[in-house]
Image (cartoon, rainbow, N blue to C red):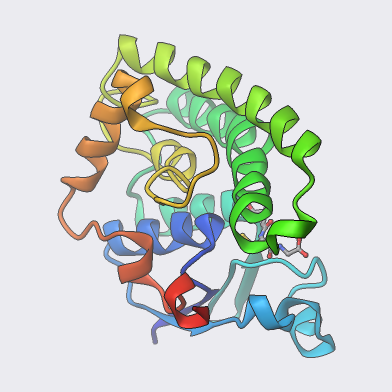
Length: 211
Ligand SMILES: N[C@@H](CCC(=O)N[C@@H](CS)C(=O)NCC(=O)O)C(=O)O
């Protein structure tokens, strides 16, 4: 039976899960969540995830939210994308926590404020503060990738899939690949993996649907 991923195309957090399911060769189907019309705040969605967040993965009798937990589940279940040793797996977790707190957690919110809120409701001071935090995070990732091709070990892991979650989107949020050559090279490497697709080609939902 195919796993079901509750997702929408604009969600970088859902993209991490979609990409991991695809690269780990799990069968999965997207279930579109109409985030922009408030679906994630409905009682029906809260019954699936009390946290009211996308993504949610349902695989048989397992229901999971939090992209990091979903990524860990996919790598544990398939034996893929998780690192080669216990030490590497801990290192993967270290980068997943960092990504959720310092990179994706800030990038997702900043991209939302800058692109999906009406122009007159955008809090410019918050956006500027977040962009400063993001610049520091891009620097940390860029420096780390100067030392190795992948974030952990010598092959792609869920740490890479988590950290890249928002970085393929073109909507502006203060990230320009040209400023970060090691991140740029690493994103090209991820995009060259067999089965890779851009988020808008992997999940239903696209800003053009609301244009
Ligand atoms: N740490 C969570 C973040 C999930 C998250 O923020 N999802 C967004 C969509 S990308 C969401 O559903 N937000 C709903 C809300 O904050 O009310 C994860 O990694 O899954």
